[in-house]
Image (cartoon, rainbow, N blue to C red):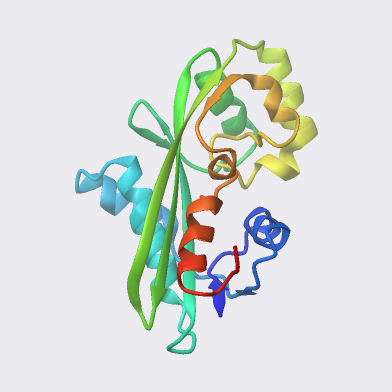
Length: 195
């Protein structure tokens, strides 16, 4: 049995599309507080993503034989974390800051069993953005607010946000917040999926 400790509809859809059986039990974590604490202790954005994924997995208590999958994604711009935007103005500011440059997405997944981590993966993808006008950014945010307000960096690559990019260096599934292929490898070795 696999339990997804996330309410993310994108992660759920990725697992469904791969025909992986799972249950959903979203973990309740004060992500902002954890991020602030870890950053104040000198942790890198990559390690923050890993720690949050582990914390989410550990928050869910399933049957002892169940595997619990915790996930987190961090947008990293020159070592600074970009969180989910609080409002449209913050989303526009994030996109203007990223435009014409590079940033990284760290997608972490940790699987626990009986409240112990048994597997982890952090996949890092480099995102290369084209220069865009302030007018386009404002229009994009206005048109797509419902989709991007839950996205670190204020865009979704699987939608209109693809127009911001000239290159994506890394795994597409990790851009969507789930390093799916390594997860499938782990689940196959444990007999949860057939390959």
